[in-house]
Image (tube, rainbow, N blue to C red; front, top):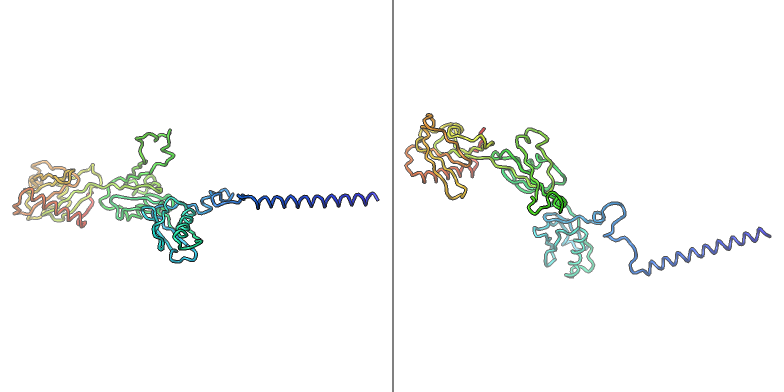
Length: 354
């Protein structure tokens, strides 16, 4: 009899505990249903995976020049690829005005676009998805004497030689140095940092020797990152035109070497038999681009060593007239400038002065 009482007591106890658990679960569920702000994960909170929430929920920031792919359910006229304009907008069919996109995440832009479609009564409940098909904000620019100067996108840090290859390579008029401007980050310009003064530079400039780069030395082939600006220096150019065998323009790779008149005459393989050596001139352009100097030159005496061989400056024009040329020095300068302009404009006779 004692054993039977014990079994009944345990049975009643288990049933009571079960009923209490059921009531507690029911109460907790009722509280969640009645709560005005249920604690559910939102897109802005993301997923507890250790990754940034904006990347999980389409938080890539749209920039000027980016190409985005837009998909709107039940509205094929809007679907397609669009490029963000310089003003940061995207122009879509059916909408009465552009929608601003630059600076927004893809998630936020999809919500803004959906709101516009609803406000303009195009769709009652639009479902919009947006993703960046090609990002153009990560780019570098290259200027100077290269085949195709401009802006080029890079997906990851790359090397200087690779960017030069994208631009078609250096032209013969390229100088001996390349300046790479690396924009300073907000962190490096923060108060208290070495660059925190008001007169601090906005970029860190690194100079590369072209000779070192072309030799294959890794020190010259530096890393290029997004936002960098590459400036290829131009070389000094002199023009030799008129009654000479091979008139042309000559790029001096190292300005320290200079170029004398006799060397320039040698580069054009000498004057023609019909040349008037005593009436040669040097046309020297001033910084104002309007005034210029016409310097008379007796090429015959220079070639015979009777007078000093003058050194030509960058952009000088050495003009050797034909025999019988009777125009004044100023008019000769006009003719020389026109001849040099043809050489520069059409690329005739552009050679390297080694």
